[in-house]
Length: 363
Image (cartoon, rainbow, N blue to C red; front, side, top):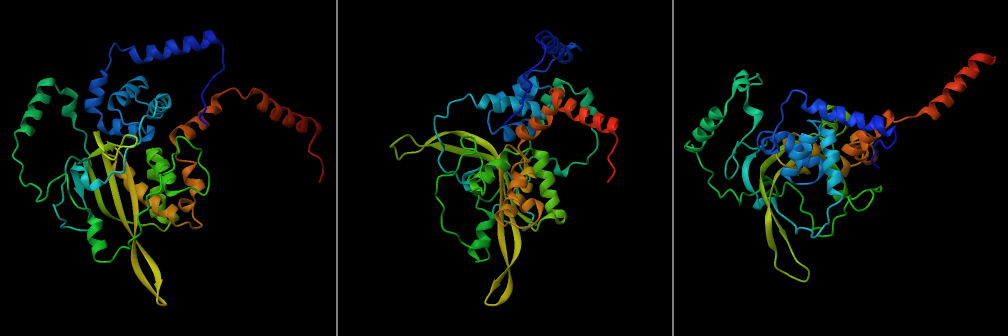
């Protein structure tokens, strides 16, 4: 359940809300929702991922209303999402059909279609750019025009909307196991409460909706020895994924738009017994989330594999992982500690006073 404050003197609450509004406006400045949408890609993508609602306009509005508080923005967007009707379910989509903007592999230098670096902070010097403090609209337009007139040094040898998966080549060599197609309808964690043991579809939904910092921290814990899923990143791809729906009793699919998506497939080496010998094979860890959210998707792939292979370590424990990473649940539960607990605390306090008055009994 999500916790939210519901008690307090009405006049005091109204004054607090007026003070909150004043704090946002006291410097006489404001930021346009469209400006947030255009300039805060990372923030926007994180909010959409954790709220599991793909709407750049609504995410930007939530960011403005929350004054940059990610937890509050996600809470707002999830609350709004719960009021919307669900008209259709999309059909199964394949990232091989993604219009790729960025695609890299840390496992192979040469991949069909080539490494596509795209837009990334990975290649920046992590130094403050003080020129941004004086940036003007003219500077923005000049940089925009300069990039749009650049000559592309080298184009991909394959169409960007039909790039094969790196994993396909390992599979063709027989280095990754083939599994029968699982076309069971996935569970929906937004309609049914999570129960244990959970299905993989439930786990992937919880992870992609999970708090970005929590997912990254648990993935990092796995790398440090609190789990046995240490991957090589086979492929990171970022781009626009086409989405289709099928109407009732209609075999045709209808294209309704595309979403920006990050998908990660990691290769995890595992030892298996074969004919009485230990041999090395590769398992797959999978991660996907809205927007360009690469670190989270990689950490998600670590946790996906860990939860598929239970062990006696924290990140292999599905209850430990899945019940802690949800943004609204975790922040809401902690925030509820600010609500009045007068009765329970006074009861404990009276017990302590009584013990102090009567003295500690001799053992």
